Length: 367
Image 1: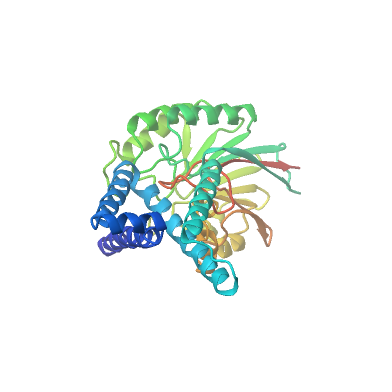
Image 2: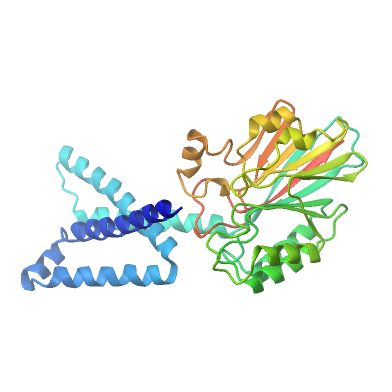
C-alpha cells in the first residue's frame, strides 16, 4: 500500500513537471512572447511562476481534477501540434504554433465540459427482462450504485434523486456499493441514509458494500460501524454473503466486496441452499467473477464499481487487462443476465468521458 501511494505521488509530480515545461515550451514559440523575452530576459521566469501559481491554486482547491485537466490539455496539445507539424511539412502554408495552442485549449474545454455534464446530469436507464419462473408478480428493480456521497452532489442532491426513484414506483431498491467515500461527511451520510430509508417499495431496500464504503485512510468523521448503524436504523437491509427470500418465488443474494475481504463465500456456496425455482437477484459490487457466477446460475447479477469506464480509455484497458469482466451495460452468460450500472455519481473525478452517463437503473422483470 505504501509503495502504491509513493508511485501515485511520483506520477502526480511527474505530470505536473512535464505539463508545466511542455506548456512553457509551446508558449515560447509564440511571436509576441518571443518579443517580450527579447525585451526582458526575466519574462520566462515570470511565466513559470505564473503557471506554477495557477496550477498550485488548482491543486489546493481540487488536486485530482486539476491534474485531470492538466493531463488532458497536454495530451490534446501534443496531438494537435503533431498534426500541425505534419501539415506544415507537406503544405505550402505554415500554420503558426499559436493556432495549435488555441485549438488544443478549445478541444480540452469542449471535451471536459461534455464529461462534466455526463457526470452531473443523472439519467434513467431502462432494461426489460422476462422469466419463465413463477415469480409472484412483475417486478421493478431500481438500482443505484457508486453515489460516493459528496463527489458530485451532497445530501440535498441525493434527496432529489431519491424522489425520482420514488416516482418510478419501485418494487425493490438495491444499492450496489460505494455508497459513501473517504471524503463523505457524517452529516451527508446521515441525511442521505434517512432519505434512502424513506423510499417506499414492495420489498424494501437492500445494500451491499463496495470497496470505498468502509474507508481507506480513516480520515472521515464517521466510522464503518456508524454507517452500518445508520443503514440499519433506516430499515436498509445489509447483505454480507447472505441470502434473503423477499417473496414466495424471489430471493436476493448479497456478496461481500472482493477487495475488502479475503474470505468471501463463492457464488456457488451462496446459491446451494436456494431452491432452483426461485428467481435469484445477486448483488456484487465489482463485475469480476462472471464465470463463477454464471456457473452458479442466479437469474440476474447487478454490479457497479466501474463508473461506466469513467475516463477514456480506462474502460477498455480494464477489460483487456482482466480487471473487469464488463465495464457497462448488459449481457447474458448461460442463463444469467449481468448488468453493470455506471453509477449515480463518481469518485473524486468530476468527469465521465468513458461513454456512459451518471444513471439510475430501472430493471423491469416480467412473467
